[in-house]
Amino acid sequence: MSIQLIARELYRLIREVEALEQEIAAAPYADREELKDRLRRLKAERDRMRRMVDGGKDAPSHPTRFR
Image (cartoon, rainbow, N blue to C red; front, side, top):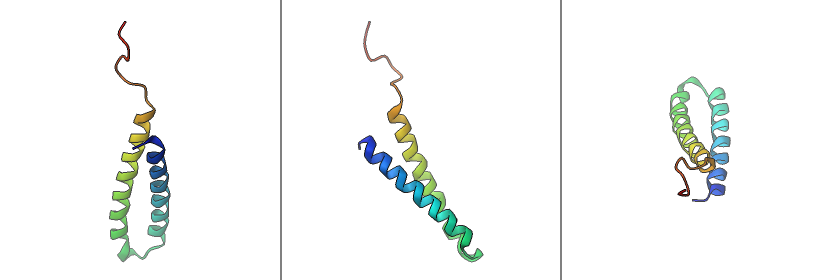
């Protein structure tokens, strides 16, 4: 998957997490547990995508040429 597609997916997940956080704040107490579980899964996916984007920007940890 290209870095652009990953970044686009990350942006979508960030917006989805923010919207769900607002929905939880406005939801009745009885519905919050289900929404919090969904939020937990979304945050895990968002964090995984963020690590993929950050990993793609890092320089390799091993030498790329022999000297």
